[in-house]
Amino acid sequence: MAFVTRFAPSPTGPLHLGHAYSAILAHDMARAAAGQLLLRMEDTDLERCKPDWDDLIQEDLRWLGLTWDGPIHRQSEHIASYNTRLEALDGKGLLYPCSCTRSDIRAALSAPQEGVAFNVYPGTCRPRGMETRKPGDALRLNLTAALDLLASADLSFTETGPAHAGQHRVDPDQAQRQIGDVVLSRKGEDIVAYFLASAFDDADQGVTHVIRGEDLFEFTAVQVILQHLFGLPTPVYHHHRLIRDDQGKRLAKRDDARAIQKYRDDGFTPADIRQIVGLPNP
Ligand code: GLU
Image 1 (cartoon, rainbow, N blue to C red):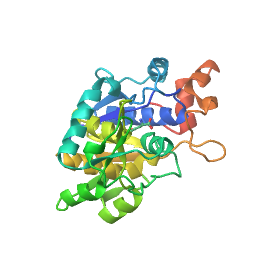
Image 2 (cartoon, rainbow, N blue to C red):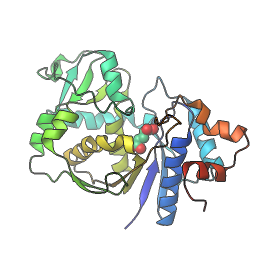
Image 3 (cartoon, protein in one colour):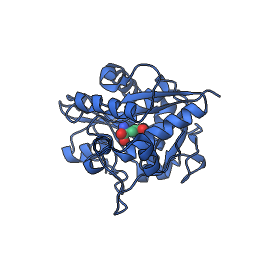
Image 4 (cartoon, protein in one colour):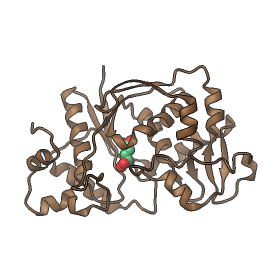
């Protein structure tokens, strides 16, 4: 079986040890399978993503001794294709505009924080038709309608990561309780929700194995739903353990103390980084 995976950072800050773990693991698994590692910049949040971070990420990856295959895929260059997909969802009657608070929407759009799974949206704007859409409104997926449409679909996926290994099936009741009507886009700022852009890119880039942090496991259900709505293949998922700080908290972009650049400046070697995150040296 072909093996195509990807490392998909958001260039909103420096790579830290957690990203290094994810990138090295994806790289090593791809190379061990004689497969491909793609690099994708998830840079749809134009306010927070900066070209300097994009450059530094590439520099850090090269320093780590990692190579990727093909050109870098930047999501900001594919906004039109995400919008086409949004229009198709609209055509199926699965979207509605939402004007609920900005912070609510921001929370749903940005990469998830540990412990804050989903802000399940109470459905305030669900009765609104698309014709009531105003500039600045978000677009939400009507999850109940989507699940109704997929009533006979086999919404299953294979997970090979250590914490959830096995075959999983999206449970509609659980999805409604835990996921709800997620934001797929915020109009006017070209911000496409992470799980929409990422699910389509995985399919468009021919990704067969998604390797990413365990904090994203819960998002897989939305992505599987989107795949089925568009007749796209479901890759194998591998959610890996997270690298934590001394207090046991997941590392975040703001943990500059663990930025790879800092380790480089302090004279650490790529082999040291592998050792610190617990991955074998080749
Ligand atoms: N862009 C996401 C992040 O930096 C990763 C998304 C993914 O691997 O699916 O957390």
